[in-house]
Amino acid sequence: MLKRLGELDYALWRSVARLYAEDPLTHAYLLHDLVYELERTDAWFEVRGGEVAGYVLVWRGSEKAGVHVWGELENPAELVPRSESIIMVHSAGLLGPLLAALGSSSRVEWYLDMVAGEGTFKPVGAERAVRLDAHNDRHVEAFLELARARGLSLTAEGARELLAKRRYYGVFEAGELVSVACAYLRLPEVWIVGDVYTLPERRGRGYAKAATSAVTRDALASGARALLHVRESNEPAIRVYTALGYRAVARKPWVFFSP
Image 1 (cartoon, rainbow, N blue to C red):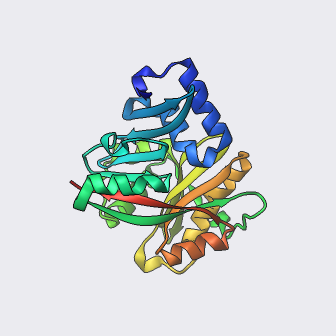
Image 2: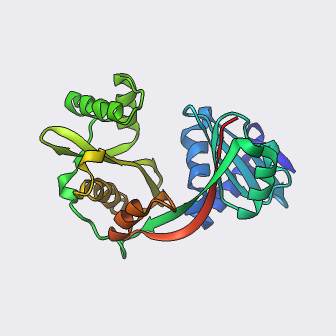
């Protein structure tokens, strides 16, 4: 039986909660978006025997929809949006049907899920990173300058919203913000780390390690594990994360769809 988000009742919610409790790393986006991003989220659930056997989760909080496809689904391609999307395929068996339906407008890249815990984390230079404050005008302006250097379109209001919503750390050199990393999803069991970026001319100096270390430190201090995604071909980034104690726990295909 296929149920849409509007049909979410107590029994279905209990099943979602059980999924998350059994595997927080896989289902963190599902729980987070249903709790904190409901107005930007849509979802379909394949329910069998009262339990969720598969789902398609769609988050529309940016220009590209973020889609998660998991479990046993008869026709997953019918449920994913036909707008520009990044589709994380958690069940590799669903990749073939998706590609067949999406056609030449899609491409696949493989990503690693990497996790750090108390037993593996090796912080490097975390004390060099500064927590970026949405109420600090200097931080907001520096964040905007870095966004412009990255070719991103961001307003001061948008920058403040991001800094308030996510936990960003940055490294300054001679007053210039040269590197950032953030936790963009925070749950008691798992924080998801991302948006790790260093200005090209400042790379190779340990700035990314420092910013990522600071975010990871906070995640572990809260009692959660830190999870990040990295493109399998991005060897420099993988070396950074490995040096900090992150370990690959899964390899998943991401489908980039541009109709």
